[in-house]
Every structure is written in structure tokens, then in C-alpha cells.
Length: 237
Image: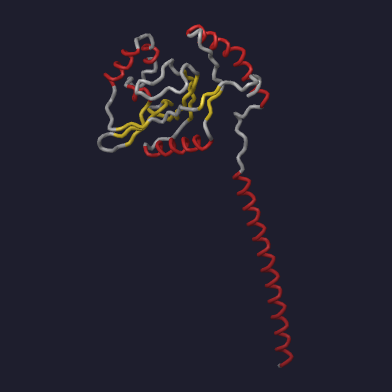
């Protein structure tokens, strides 16, 4: 009987050792799987270069083409307007990185309030007037210089349009197209072209006649970047 108990104890000991080994092996496999998942997650977080990235050689070619085909024409025109004033053509618009990040966060926030999705971000070429202030009294920092402004787009009534955020007297927030915000009839894509030949005063008065009155409006258009002339060595960018 004592011998039988010893044999059983030995068998149980071997069994427990085998279980322990199997448990260790299983734990090792689980750890390996966990490590693979962590590695995969890290790889998923890596941001790949967008297809729109261009080489520095392509960028240099485009920069030089602007120098050859645009800068001289702009300088010639501006000099003809004011021959006694030296004019340096702006070659870049600069925003600090935090401003760009804040702008993107802001337009996403406002779009979410209006329950719309941002489709794209448009960059429009523009030009500051030869004036010291805008019509609202704000100072024009770069008179006569080229600039740009950007605005997000969304899909409204089946069309991709630049938009702004409005709030009515009841507090309802919605997105409307830039054209509607200016008072143009929705969908009237040719209206701007038709009105270009009219005087500036008539242009704005016509807008006000058809403009819907909202309690508040929030523009999503960003400008006011730092316009700068080319570096001392104009072949660099």
C-alpha cells in the first residue's frame, strides 16, 4: 500500500511538472503574440508619404519657372503703376506650424458642430489692394503683394463648395456655401462671372439685397500669412 502511494505521488509530480512546462510554453507563445500585436500597432501608426509629395528637383523647376514666367511680369506692372517705388515680388507665404495645426483643429470642430464632413482644403491665389487699410479699417500689411487664402469645402446639395458656419436666432448651427453667405443664389455658379464687370459698390449692394440674415456667422477662411520676398540668392527656395 505504501509502495502504491509513492508511485502515485511520483506520477502526480511528473504530471504537475508537465503542466508547468506546458503553461510556461503557452505563456511564452502568448507573450510572443502580444509582442507581434504591439509591433503591428506601431507599424500601423507610421505615416507614409502622400502621393502628392514631389522631389526637390521638381520643386526647384517649378520655383524657377515662376521666376522666369511670372515675377518679371508682376514687377513690370507694379513699376508702371508707381515708377518711383521699388517693388519686390513676394515669393512665399509663411505660417508657423502651430497656427496650421490650430486652424485644422478649428475647422474640424466647426464642421462637426454643423454635422458636415470636410471634403478638401482649397488654396486661392489673391492680391492685396494698394491701400493702407481694408474697408473694415483693418491694416493691410502687404499692399500690392500676391497672397493666398484657404478654406475648407464640404458637399452641400450634391456639390462640393467652400463653406462657412452660421447660427440662426434659435441657435441652430448649419453650414452654408460661400455663395449663399455672400448673398448669391444657391447654385448660381456663373453669378460671380456675370457680376465682375459691375462696379464694386454695386457688387456688394447686390449681395446685400439677397443675403439671408443669420444670428451669427463664422468664417473658416484663413489668410494673414507672412508674405516674403525671395532670399538674397533668388535661385534658392
